[in-house]
Image (cartoon, rainbow, N blue to C red; front, side):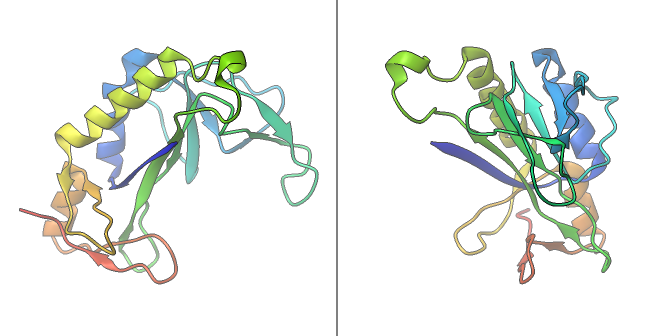
Length: 178
């Protein structure tokens, strides 16, 4: 079963969440990587540049890409690897903050007796991430049944006039409670 946490985070909120989960010693992997890449540990001083990353709590499995612009590079298998996918919330060209999300596959598919399931370190990291987001972030008004978690810095941006909008071509505006 997959877990998805939709959010709005300003860069300050990202640093705060990474600081709160830094004691878990998660590795920061880019979405597409080179075969010899060595992932650094993520923390409050980690600089995020790409739109998406993986937070790994153990050994990752990857496969080579055979077509496209990233041919020859490796893509992490997010279902079989103990990783949390982070799609960052970013400002668009109109000055609106677009939504992002955390996604994690918490259960392995197939025969659980042979594979043993996901590692307990990974499940603990997922629970800690959920607590870090749910305890500090505000909630939004529901949009098509989805409630977004809005970081403190993103909420201040919204109060100062920056619009929060769902990711996607036809994303709707999101309002923050309180």
